Length: 560
Image (cartoon, rainbow, N blue to C red; front, side):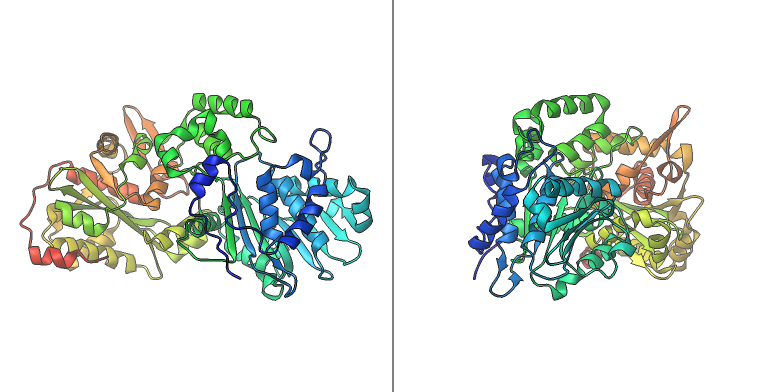
């Protein structure tokens, strides 16, 4: 049997309101039997307590048919067993979750099977537990088959002994589970947890011996830039949908705006709200969205970003708060994804390097900044290093740091000094190409003595290393950077690491000056951004180009 879970025409489908499920049910009889059960379940808290069949839109039935219609009863195996639904807030996600899992409990044949709805918090768990319990109590026939145990958030099948448990996430709760079917609610919240990947691995491990089972992830967009297991799921299912990753056992249904609507700003037009809200006019009220977006626009960018993420499923690129750095508003528009380190060296007439951080509890941030020989724009490339200890001490940031490591923007080192040597290697790569300015390396005047020692040990003249004063004295560089970013005179590579650092930066006014300090930013890291301010301090004095050694430059342009 051949099928595909790719949906390359998804943009046309979502704009025309057609199904985002890429293929019909593999086993139509199984799909029909499951839909017969699902449609009979009642939504108690809706006016008139309608059945799912009466209240749900066709997209819901398409999803249910895809999940249950992938089951090959002759071989007791589900051919598609990994699903992901991304949908805006208030589109009945938790009620649908309850209905799917009650249906799975009734369709299950395995004696004493475990089915789990795994939620990140007790509150989220209750969002699915209550409608599930209500569905049982609202149908006399179901009460004969199923026993609801509200205080345990558990529903038991009286005949098979199978149970559906709605649990709040905890490593002790999920450890050792042998669940046949798992639904993970609000995956975006799991993305903020450093241990979420191991937790979900424990929770889904039972499928190894239960080929009839499935995993379903449900989520809205995150109120911060996606991270951890949520980012992994989002990237993976987007690639599957777009046909970049062939994974016939996995299927994603992602209600998000096509790129052209995001770029044009048309996603904010009221007539387009239904694109990511397929329940608009049912569980989602159009006037409510109009009122809320107007409130968010008055409240400012932070509030607006929250509305767009939750109610329109727009991915947040920067964490814009009221005390944000002014340059953050313009940062996304200055991205050039072709600007690798090699491209920067090839295009630049002169290069400076800014370095910041490097304590065991910090990142070691680096910014390579070149002046384009044709446009005179300042081109910036960034990298960071971190010791393993950071992952333990900063658990709240661990999932993000692992993401940046996978992106290639962060290197995790095991031994102190490995990061310093890597930075020195890069500096001398630029020096050997003849591009490094005479005063070409800027470092925090009060820190990173190891960097200075390493560079001078390799026979760099100490005069070429400039101590950049921090605190209020860095204010000029901060203002220069934000003006040049706003004016389009600083270009960067559009990398997630720097988007995170820029979003983390908090401005602290001091008299007539402004400060951006690590203390004001809390546990969130900004070292590569601080390195950029050091690089700007050097580039702002208009360093002169040195004679370029063409052979050395060609050798230097070769992957870092």
